[in-house]
Structures are given as C-alpha cells and as structure tokens.
Length: 243
Image (cartoon, rainbow, N blue to C red; front, side, top):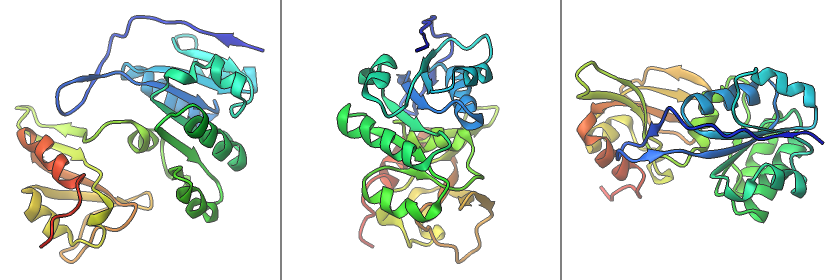
C-alpha cells in the first residue's frame, strides 16, 4: 500500500464567471497518459488533486513537483477511496484502461460517497448510452483530451477560452440545457446576443453553416461581451423559452 499526501498553499486560483474563487478537490482514478495530464492541469489551475492507481510506478508520470496525493490501490475499492479523501471530493474522474473498472468506480463515487460531478472514460462507445442512463457522463472518443474532461465534469458554468486585451470581449464555452437540442444556431445567437464562433462535435471542431443546429453532445464556443457572460449562461442553462 502506498499513499503520499502533501498539502501546499494554493497559489493559482480559477475564478468562476461570477467572480467567486472556485477551488475544487478532484479525485482521479488512473495515472496513465490522460490521468496524469488531467491531474497536472488541475493542479496548475490551483485545484487540489488525489490520484489513484494500482501500479505505484505509474505515479512517476506526475513528476517530482506534483503536490497532490498519490494513493496506491484499486480505484473502486471503498477503503482506497477513503484514503483518497473521497468524502470531501467535489469531482471524480475514472480514466483507467478498463471500461468496467471505470464505470464501477464512478458509480461508487456517486452512489456511495455522494460525489455529484463524475465522469468515466470508456473505450467501447457502444456502452455509452447504457452508462448515461445510469447518470454517469462518459468520454468515449480517443480525441477527447484531459482539458475536455475537465470541462465536462467541473462544477462550474461558462469556461473562458480567450479574452481580448481590453477584457471586454470573451470567447467562452457555455453548455446549453438539453431543451436547446435541435435549435438552429442562428436562433441561439439571436436569443443570447452572441456569436457562435465554432462548435465541437464528436471531438472535431467545425465552423457552423447558416443552417446548423445544436445537437446532443455539441460544445458551443460563443463570442460575447464579458459583461453579459453570466446572463447568457443563465439563459442557456435554463429550459429553452417557448418561441
């Protein structure tokens, strides 16, 4: 059994669009390429991280400067999760090399320990629909990056991707409510006073056409005034207004 826990003062902070400081405690199962990149990315942005892996040598991917916890053990085992301090976790990502282990760990985190924000990486896309019915968001395509996993699971709203030098205009990803599925992007632009700069569909970026519609699983990247981000976020994350 191998556990290291090092707590250092948080230097960086990730601020939500409302301006509040948001520091998330994140537990990750799997310290492979995706898991280690995810852990380092989260720590870089000021979050606290615990990484679980049954292979102690996998922790070398984190490097000597990683300040989070390294927990050796099986990621869906209750005792292992407790050693990772799962009870205070804000989010959990299962990104090991096994589909069954990932979904089982995600369910234990959600159903046993009440972690609201979870995601499971899967290699068999055919299983995605089954897992989604269980309330477990999944990441199926190999083109998904650690950054996109963060965007899928973090308990936040709009995520800034670029801000102009004056700070008045922002490119942000805002996840719309499912009721917006099937809505023409032009209609979304009219309703929000923003412009859809591009969208990500099945892992591929694409410039929308005049007749493009918002589809399930799409990620919208909107260009809009910084001052209106919170207002637009509230609109899109609510049930679509009746035309």
